[in-house]
Length: 401
Image (tube, rainbow, N blue to C red):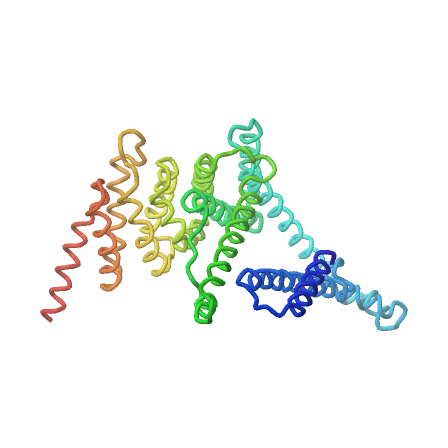
C-alpha cells in the first residue's frame, strides 16, 4: 500500500505540474508519465488478486478441515435430532460403516506411502551427487520400492508406479529447464499483437521499443528466478547448469529403469512421446546428457515391440518423430560410447518393425524426418535405408493398383 500511495502521489504531482505548464510535453515527459501509470496499474492488479484470494480463503470456514460435510452439519446443528441420528447409526448399518471406514483407512495408508516415496524421490533431485547423503537417499528409495514389491498387495504395488511416474515428470521438467538455461538464458521475444498496435500510433515505435525492453527484462528476471528456485534450491546454489543437467539426465534414466521393473513403462512412453522441447534441446546438449537421453530413448524404443504391452499408435509415431534426430546427431564416438553395436542393431530392428506396421502416411513422415537428419550427420546409425526402400516399393504398388 505504501508503494501504491507513492505511485499515486507521483501521478498527481506530475499531472498537476504539467497542467499548470503551458508548453508541450516532450517525449521524456510522455515516457515518464507512462511508466508511472503502468506501475500504478500493476500495483492495482496485485492488490486486486490479494483481496480476491484473501476473500476466498475467509469465505470457506471448513477450509482447514478438508471441506467435510459432516463437520459443517454438526457445526450448524449439534443438538438436532437429525445430527443425533446420523451420529449414532443403527445396528443394521454398523457392518457397512466398519467396512467403509476400513476402505478409508486403506486409502489413507496408500496415500501416505505415495507421499513418502514421492518426497524421497524429489529430494534425490535436490541433493548434489557429490554429497555423501545422495547414495543414502537413493538406497532409501530403492528399499521402499523393494519392500512395496515384496508386500504383494495390488494397492501397495501401485504406490511405486504413482511415485515413479511423478518423479519422471518432475525430473524431465527440471532437465528441460536446465537445458533451456544453457542454450538461451536471455530468451528471444518477438513483437506481439499489442506491440504492433502501439507501433501504428504516432511515436508508437519509441513506446513499443521501450515496452519490449521492459518485457524482455521482466521475462528474463522471472525465468532466472524460477530456475534458481527450482533447480538450485537449498543445497545446489554452487552447482553449474551443465553438471546439474548431467545429474538430472542420469536420474531420469534410473527412474525409467525402475518404471520398467515395476510394470509401468507405458507411462514413461507417453510422457517421453510428448517431450518435444526436451528432444530439441537434447540435440545441442553435452555428450554425457545426450548419452543418458539416448539410452532412455533406446530403452523405450525396445519396449515398442513387446507383444504384451498395448501402446497407442500415436505414441509410437510421436516417439519415432521426436527422438530419431537425436539418434542421428548424438555423439557416438569412441571418446564416450553410448550404445554397443548389438544394442544399435537391436534398436534398428525395433524401429524397422514399428515403421513397417504404421500407416503409409506416418511411414512417409517418419522416414522423411530420419533422412533429412541422417544425411547431414556424421553418424551412420540408425540406418533405416531398408525401411525407406520398402516404403517406396509399397507406394509404387499403390500407384500401380
